[in-house]
Length: 85
Image (cartoon, rainbow, N blue to C red; front, side, top):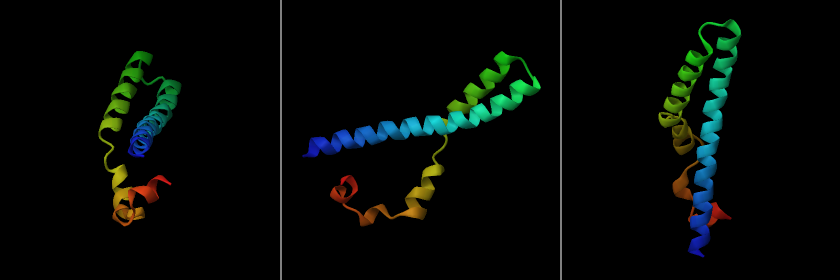
């Protein structure tokens, strides 16, 4: 039974990583639309700035989880079985 928990946790971790990338990428696309439309810089420069922003946003977004950890629910009140089913 513990193998199923490991599979579920790994699957949830992968989903969390993809969700974080989609959220940060959405912010980058909003920036790209305005920057490319206004032609504020060369296309390559805008893409490089957006790529750096996506990378930094994905690596430094630890504050977003503080709300879930302290504001919405209390993980100490749940057991592993309650969380998985």
